[in-house]
Picture (cartoon, rainbow, N blue to C red):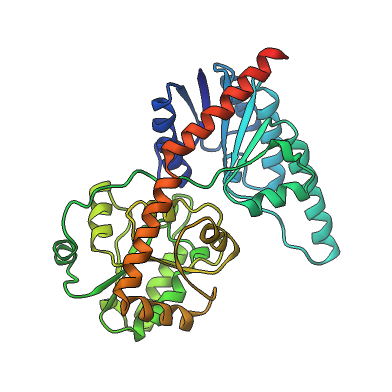
Length: 364
């Protein structure tokens, strides 16, 4: 069976990484994956051509990100609609996040209703919609999307990477020998709550914060500059390391040196950066936002703090660093979660979806 995959590709992007992992896992299932890459600055006519390219397979699988189809909701709706109408084979959509305007004044309620309606019309063109969270499934149901179309498939965890060196050797290479290393991994964006960690780090003895990532490609890096200014203001330059984007062997070294992964997120959907961190079986401290509470309910063991509360975050860091047995327990439960929600298992489940769609299309 041949699958056409519409996705970002060969770029610094969480969906590109996800698609690469998934492609490899699906090919091990015996499937042929044809990548139809997202093009920068595509116009409506380009999306018509891209939609036609998807037909060189048995199933079309679309990795969805709003910015792939336009810079605003109007362009997204127009371009995505024309793209979908060109695809004449069964369509699967992986919806990595749902972006809706806030509730509130009459204007915003009207805008929200129009965007709901656009989602409903567009999603009527899809045969199966994959979401990573039950909360996203509920959002789609509220739009009137048919429950039969919806499948919840938690964001998979990459295969475990064996640590190349021991922890102390990696800390020595990083210049943090004898320190507790707290790491936030992935793109540096405001919704991930980096600024919450800085006051906590200032008050914590013997702790170093590693920011392992940089701004997204389409981001001017203003938020990162704000963080750097705040680091100077708090006089904690010696307690924060901004590492930028790292090649794979450097990621391994940083993860080896890391004692605790931090996820102080203010907003999140399926976080590819957190999934990468989970692959290293590290204990995690995370904010108690809805998306992360749901991951906790699915078995991802984390110490959770009140979202937006820097003092509570500091208390959780102190608690965990003083309790090695709890850290070991969290690491073991993270390992179990990673094995349950691996790309191999996800690819097996996806293969069954493809088979079902292919069988249905042959009957019709």
